[in-house]
Image (cartoon, rainbow, N blue to C red; front, side):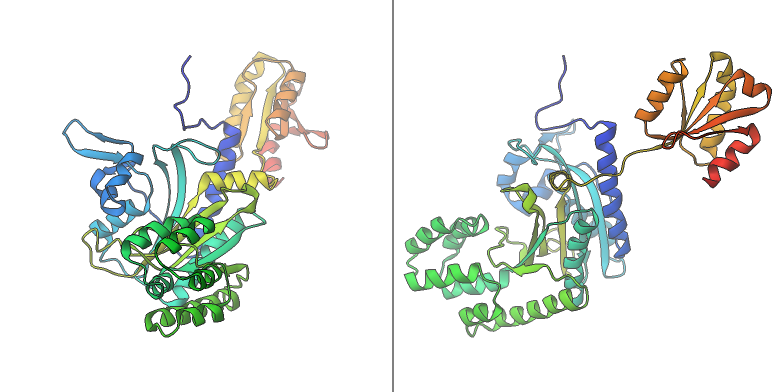
Length: 422
């Protein structure tokens, strides 16, 4: 017996209904914020991902050489392909350029709950502006998209890498020290972080204050710690303005400052953020994003760029954990012939309904009326049309409301008007 490859999944019609609901809801929110959809190839030149993430990424890729000897890889994420497309085709488009996307991605990773080797990603890139209002809108968009899906409990956490860099300067941490410390901060492994900072000859007093600042939302405390660092103070003032806009103009009050949000890759800069769903437990992050510079790395003219990616599968899982009731797929009409001699008329009725934009199906197993009604109920049909020989002699059919059980006899010509009005 053949089985689905490890780390991949099949999706039943019921599961696909949930996925299409989520995709439609997200796409509607993206477009309401002025974003346009973009799509890129499933595989790219391998060099695109090593340029972005370093050679070590190859161990996580589904990488291969094609018949022409070209080194290719299935995309592990969508930011790099979208920025490649921008550099190649869209640099002359009016700014700001707002792009959103959905797509399957592939990572050779250890499968676990909410993490697969083939997974869907949703996200967007904002190219050409880094004004306070543009950044605040990006944060609002990420939060609004997840709220609009039906999630009740999500937390928006906002950090800033420029401020973190200023703190590292104050602690006199060398570049190699920072590379060792960043993953500990990112994973909130504060006990290990304390040990690492001692090994870097940071004083106990500074370690205690640093750990406090990493976990505080108090801007006054952060400002006091960074002191007179001009770049960091400018960034902190910008962050305050962005948060004011987020709260007062975009009406997003549910956020906290969290300087422990860091990114180990060099192209990230300035503001970064994450959105968590506590319903998922330890693996609770749904969304991550911020400001970055990939355009110049890919050979384009540098312009401000920011964006975010949403874990599509984790969002679905979070909705299920919260007990969200997904819309149930419904069939408008199911048409039942009393006997096979009615089939021609049944098919004509069904086709006419479909042409009018009414979802319709008919019994194709030549069952009795009782079993056909059970099938119609299983398909969540709202109405059933029963076509029998006696009714046809009078040019009529019986329409049954599956919810109430009420029935009425209507003429063949009146079926379509009746169902369109209802």
